[in-house]
Amino acid sequence: MSVHARLRATVPAPMPPSQAGPPEITGLPGRRLLVQRNDDEIVAQPLDDAFVARAGASVRFPAPWPRSRGTWEVAPDASLAVFAGVHAVRAVDPSGATRWEVPHGCWYGACRELHETYDEYADRQDHRHPESGSVGFSADGRLAWAHVRGPLPEGELSPDTADEWLVIDAENGRVLARADAEAAAAGSLHLPHPTDPHQMGLSIGEGQDGAPLRWGRWDGRELTMDCLDGDLCLLSLSPSGDRLMTVSHDQDSLAVRDSRGALVEALEWNAEANDSPTPFSSCRRHRF
Image (cartoon, rainbow, N blue to C red):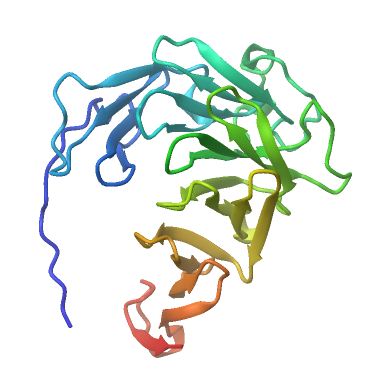
């Protein structure tokens, strides 16, 4: 069966591409945002269900450090931006004021310092290209889930822990739960469950070493984490949140799985049967 794509809408980027990163559309229907960042600020433009920018609703968040020094996320209601930096996770309101900050270990691999400010390493050559974590908001915006390099000032979880996964109260920055992410990341990405704020997906990249995929559940007291089998990158979630779309680390298998990682359906690229370098150009469809 052929499926033909059609253009739904064209949304102007709020910043010129020569000065900023690519724009992204985030959020669920009814709370979609067009978000773009340069070194100085984030612009968040609310969109209606037809992807039309809402007049006069644009919000700007001053950035605490350049965009090459970490990742960021804007709350679903565009009231808060959280920056996952080299040494801390910082929440900033539109005035530029810091609402809260959670310090953590340094994302530059050879550094064991607990930096207090960005200025401590801003001009250090060895900190110019650090690894990074990420942050994601729950569907209701009340929780911020953060993937950080340990330890926190409160101490390490264990001597073998490199990366930690945190559940944070987005209002005041209180760390509600923490767990060993069982990874040593070069980068990561959060994808929230669309209806349950107590569940979150975390796709971790370890460069050529692998792509661990984690699924977290917070019960109000403890964070439990499922380590999905295989090196998998999380691409998307179904509207119900009970199906995950993944691609293998080698990009030779596109699959739909349940939240425990069990395979539901997959498309696999047969490299031996096809000389084309493009994955999925020749696929076999499997049902399980």
